[in-house]
Length: 110
Image 1 (cartoon, one colour):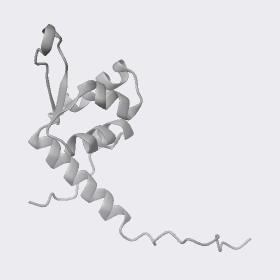
Image 2 (cartoon, helix red, strand yellow; image 1 turned 180 degrees about the vertical axis):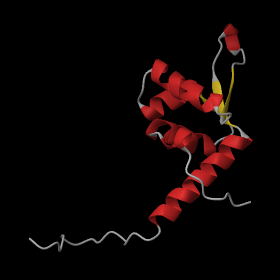
Image 3 (cartoon, rainbow, N blue to C red; image 1 turned 90 degrees about the vertical axis):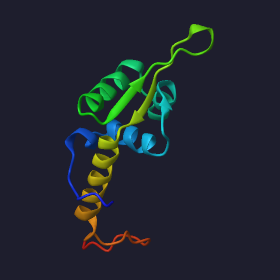
């Protein structure tokens, strides 16, 4: 199913777009992996995940691991996956008319 192009301001923020793109590649990703991928602190990542969670785009689970250690896992919901697809489709629609980048020096009048 192809998503109808739709700009999504929740996803568009750079960190949130990167979070969604990373989560789209896996069923779930551990919080610490996302933190390292983005190069941000725990509070910054938590804030962005809260925004995505409030929109219904991500789900967080905290299963107890070995030795009673609790680790947070993050996954895109179906709604989040659809919103990401629609947002990417809109970005593509917005940029389809742009010329391909040239490999030579600029030919702007000077």
